[in-house]
Image 1 (cartoon, rainbow, N blue to C red):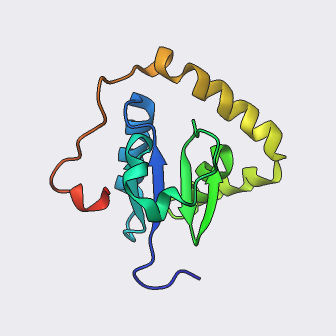
Image 2: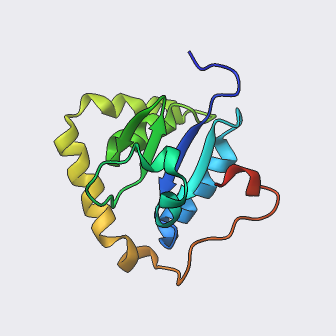
Length: 134
C-alpha cells in the first residue's frame, strides 16, 4: 500500500518527442501526485537516484519505486497501475513473458526518433508543473 507523500521517479529520454509526450500523458492522469520526473541526461546530478541505476547505460524509461528499478515494458506497466481511468487494466499484460514484452518495447524504442522526432535539448517544464521535475 502506498504511504502518504510517497513518490516514484520516472527517468525518461529528455530529447525524445515520444518520451516527452508520454510524460505529459502521465502528468494528466497522475491524480494522486505520485510521480516525479527527471531526464536520463540529468540523473547523474541526483546521486540518491543515480545509485539505483544499473551500471550499464540505460536507454529505456526507468521507474524507481520503493528502492527498486523497473525498465522497459515492466516500467510502463507499473506506471499505468497509478494512472486514473481504465489504464490500470493494462497491467494484465504482465502475464506475457518479459522477453516478449521487451521485444515490442525495444522495437518502438529503436525507431522512436525516426517516427516521433528528437529535440536538440531536454524539455523545460511549464512553471505550473516544474515542482514535479528534479
